[in-house]
Length: 377
Image (cartoon, rainbow, N blue to C red):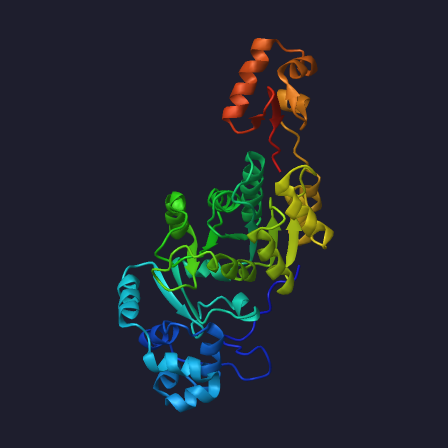
């Protein structure tokens, strides 16, 4: 694995030009980044050409127009909406909330090497997590029980190995990845597709608060931004950009997870994918990634070895299920009668054990009266 290059604090653009070194002035940075209709690319072009945010905001319209064209210059002439600036300042008055611009030491260096980094972003929690070695874990919102378990257990083990888990706070795989990381001594970062003051989906509000307490929530979108569909693919470049590698757990052929994987490949990050049944729509995306060169993994040790974090001793510890009924079942779907035949137990004993294992999340009841072990990866 190749971790992101650690460039200077402000390499804009990524060439031999000397880096910008501008002082952090909250009001000026807010006004620069809250002008409607002005992209991060345009903001950064103006900073390169004109200097500090104060210099940009004070430049004559004609000078701005020569740098970024008449349409953007007209937007600058109108300026930022005072209500948005005031809202941001009020929000930032609460402890644990941050507005981090390109000039700040807390700006994650990994983002400085991606295409179109945000000029500034909002964070809740501890921004130090943004600069730790990380892996992104992403996948379907409509994950199966096995997929959720895989995401959670992979994330827990990767976190235990010293990696921060990055994901997108969505239902399914994302939420499971965050929860797996929160169960370990490490932590997790959620890159949001809404404003930092808008939790989406609302069902993950409790999870988001826990991430803010033990990790970090980040958003490049202005406060108050709701769940706009186009924003979620855009934020995926930041998920992969924070990480040295991306793991896709379950994904359909057309999904946001494949967008994240594509960004990762473009950014020079490793891409891992967990295979599944050839009949499962949620495995199609992972199989496509593997065909395109992603590394097939079916246990955590595969990733740790690839990243240079696994020892030979650890790789030899292929964990067989400790429960005798699980060892007898293997991982194929079986009826109760088939399980009885394999174990030699009574119908009452097998039924009781299956019930207990289902409650523990180690067995899943399937259609047709069959049961299948959920793999502990």
